[in-house]
Amino acid sequence: MWATKPAHAWTAPTHMMLMDATRAGKRIVAVGEHGLVLLSDDDGHSWRQAAQVPVSATLSAVTFADARHGWVVGQWGVILATDDGGETWQKQRMDISVDQPLFSVIFTNTQDGIAVGLWSLMLATHDGGKTWTKVTVPKPPGGNRADRNLYHIFSDGRGALYIDSEQGMVLKSTDGGANWSYLATGGRGTLWTGVAMPDGRIIVGGLLGSMFQSTDGGTTWSVVNTGTKSSITDLIATGDGLMGVGLDGLVMNQKAGAAAFEIAQREDRAALTAALLDKAGKPILFAQEGVLAKP
Image (tube, rainbow, N blue to C red; front, side):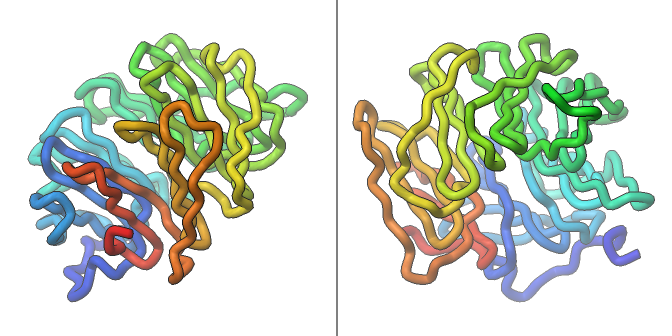
């Protein structure tokens, strides 16, 4: 099967579809289609492929616990791990009997991690990924079974975990992922991304520019007027506020304390998937079209 073959060495890897990016110490690591893992050691100016990736499955998300230990997840429920900053990767899990992709992964330290995906698939490890166990997600309110897609898992840095889901729902755990409760934002659309802000706010966003924020850990939510109908795919805290990117070339910024967003739309209408800030605080954008020049 093609997905189980090692990743190909591409001639123009920065022009291929990228799904997520993060920092591994000073290094930037981005992941995408066909098992692509890109590394940059000069703050996003130049890129190279990882030396060894054992699969060609599309990779959806990447996380690092420190500068050396990282994990990626993706198609066919694949989980890969690295202990050398992303140079080489080893397969920890893959299930080719069912294409149940994983969409997001988080590690709170080098041992404890959670990966989430399609149809409420949730996997947990407490040994750095040597073993992954399925976690039974509770049924959503009014639902017969847990079958919501789990799109993005993130932490508030104070012990709580949050997962963006469908139908305006956010899942929350305060015990490291052992137990989960559903939080209704009041929206009905799919939520694709979320971020915990330094001031304690939890902000989630997704379909058609929808955004909600909570100042009490998700107990209550208020609608945030984004001023856009383009779907939001990534939210990040900046030094002085909030930044979001999305479909149709959407780039949005909200200064700390400001009520409104500054909305920009790239002329190329690129489908943006992720953003990181360089050392100067300027955004590096990732998209279905690859690594994009800084706007």
